[in-house]
Image (cartoon, rainbow, N blue to C red):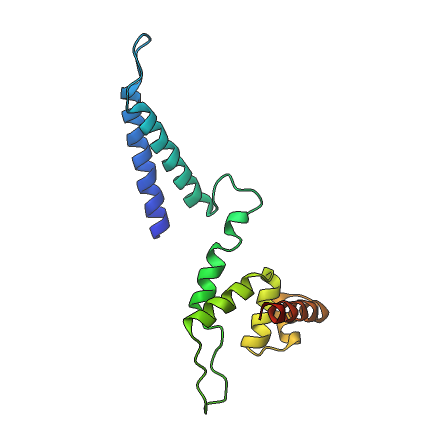
Length: 157
C-alpha cells in the first residue's frame, strides 16, 4: 500500500471517529448546543477537505486546476538537473542556488508545452525532429514552442 493510500485510510478513520463523537454532542430538542460542537464541525470540514485533496490529487474547490499549475512544477524544476554535463570536460559549470531559483522563476513563466520543448532542446540537446516524434507533435509546432520559450527566457534575463 502506498503512503498516500495509508494516509487516506487514517484520515477516513479519524473522520469516522470524529463523526461518532459529534453525534454524542448533539443537543436535545430543548438543550443548548455543546460548546465543542463548532470546533468538531470545523475539524470535520478540515478532514473532509484533506481527504478530498488526497483522493483527487487536486485542491478542492479550486477552479480550472489553478491549484496545480505551479505547485509540483517548481519543486520538480528545483530538484532536477536542468543543466546536465555536456561533453566539454575542461570547465565545470557551477550554478549558484540564487541562479537556480532565478532560472526556475523564468521557466515557470513558460507554458507547460513550451517548457517541455525548450528543456528537451536546450538542456538535453534533442533535435526538433526527435522532440516532435517523442511528443507526437509536428516539427513546426516544436519549433514554435522553442522559439516562444527562447524569447520569453531572453525577456526574463
